[in-house]
Image (cartoon, rainbow, N blue to C red; front, side, top):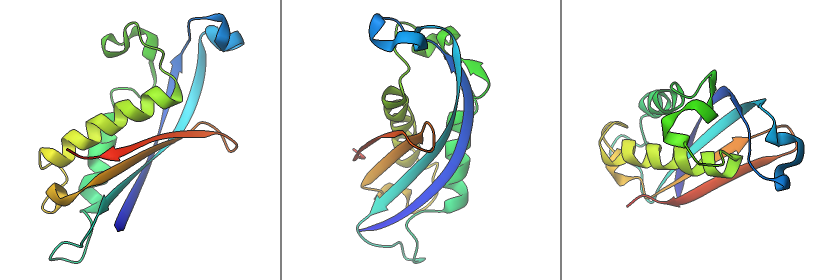
Length: 133
């Protein structure tokens, strides 16, 4: 299987509910390095997985509204625990939509799997990966 990966980062603030989260119940900041890998079984007629520029643009468009925001205040996250794992799936859904809707350019329709990985620090990361339906 072939893959191409693009990277971006965001800076956010958020808090968590529940004793499970200890001090993270208080408002705190995080800087996430976000990697998104696109997979396909065969290369396009141009010999690529996907247009890297368009893939990066789609990632920036997804992350832009979150950057420098308090996620606790955004309506799409009302009542949600915006854990690293949860945000991985949120970004996965947006990138899957971009593939299905043609925003990755020609060849984007052939993407069969996407992996979204959020690096929380140099020692911790989480991800979500799945098929693009």
